[in-house]
Length: 301
Image 1: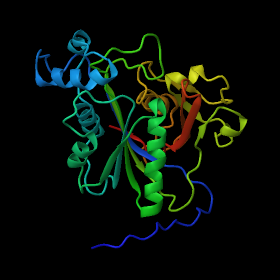
Image 2 (image 1 turned 90 degrees about the vertical axis):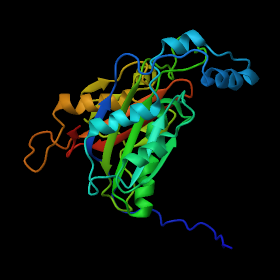
Image 3 (image 1 turned 180 degrees about the horizontal axis):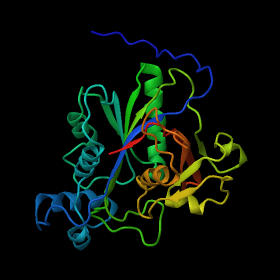
């Protein structure tokens, strides 16, 4: 027996907004193919059955020519590039974000990632929001931290380009070209204060009210299609086309390296700790998202 009670809403956050602090980051984009193609295996039959109700046929030639690196393999590669995590560094929450489904349905990325992390943190995945999925994942992670008193967070974005069905013709915000993953280890030191420097919605003057003046910008490839771009005074780094989930976050790693915003500790000078805005635009939904990160302690994996 158990008793269910109504959810208790936490008090409305008070105090000045805070930013997540990026302390370690790494990307992983392996070239070439992974596992060899084996025609006629059980996976082909599964794809044929999966597509039949929608009159979509399994594209054997496309599948055979693809890289066939699973989302779990890519996530592991990004974690390895991030470097060893002891219990003091290990996240209390891991959120995986992706824009396209994995072709390997016998593995759950969040469960596999959780097994690789010390302490067995809470881990889950977000999807179905295209290139803006990682922005929602970051917001969810911070909300968990605010409500649970956590401070160590992991955001893991994955683009897995192998698809067993025909892809839409022409360029699209969700277009995939190859495989990549980005791992971001963050600290939330804002307690129950509100999350600052972020917004998501239809482009317009009000949406950019929290965009910090003069910050460096790491932009996904979709931002160039935005009909109303925010005013930018800082340097701009653009992500690769064909990386809907990882493009803007890989650009973040390039942006902090190019602008000197990477910090290494107390001896930092100059631009160390400069905020960096990560932004992308989904043309199909006409929605733009951005967030601001403090990069003062960032160490590349």
